[in-house]
Image 1 (cartoon, rainbow, N blue to C red):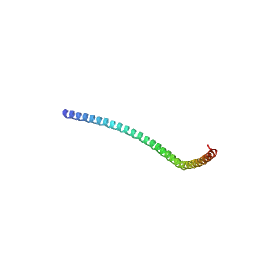
Image 2: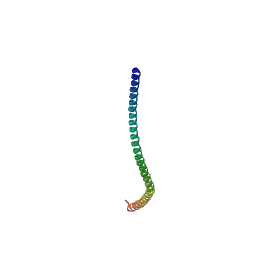
Image 3: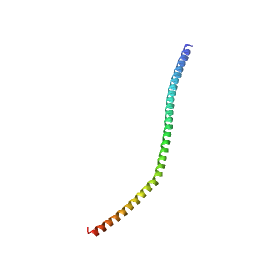
Image 4: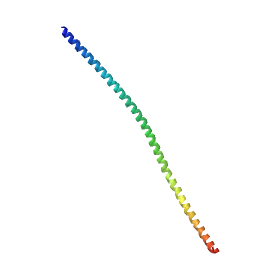
Length: 109
């Protein structure tokens, strides 16, 4: 009976060590999962923040594009007016130069 009792004691000790080792593994697994959960939560917060920043950036770029689109016709108008003014100035200058030439010719210069 002693050998049976010793055998049961060894089996019980083996089972206790197995349960303890299993508990330790489970604890390490749970700790690893907790770390993974924290990383995932942190990544989610970052992505939410980044998504908001990206949305604001997109809105800013759209607003800038609209402002540029509104300025182009004005700039085109300014350029057209400047070109017309330059053409009128060149026409007047040519007329003045013709008159100066005529006066110089009349004076024999």
